[in-house]
Length: 87
Image 1 (tube, rainbow, N blue to C red):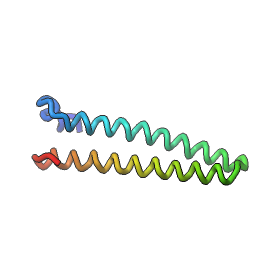
Image 2: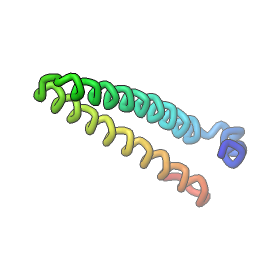
Image 3: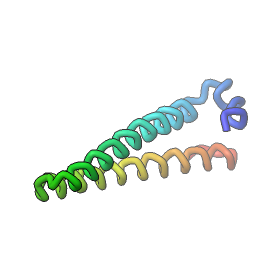
C-alpha cells in the first residue's frame, strides 16, 4: 500500500500523513481494546462486580465505535486518492 501512495507522499500532500496517523491511532486503540476486553474476561471469571464489568463493556463498545469511525474516514480518504480526487 505504501508503494501506491509514494507519489502522493512525495508531492507533500497532507492527506496520506493524516491517513497514516489515523491508522496508527486506530492500531493503538485496537490494542487498548484487546487488553480491556481480555481483562474483562478475567474479571468475569473471578466473579468481579457486574456493575463494573457492564460499565467496562460499554466503554469498550464506545472505543470500538471510535476505531470503526476512524477506519471509515481513512478508507474514504484512500478512495478519494485512488479515484484521483480529494474528499
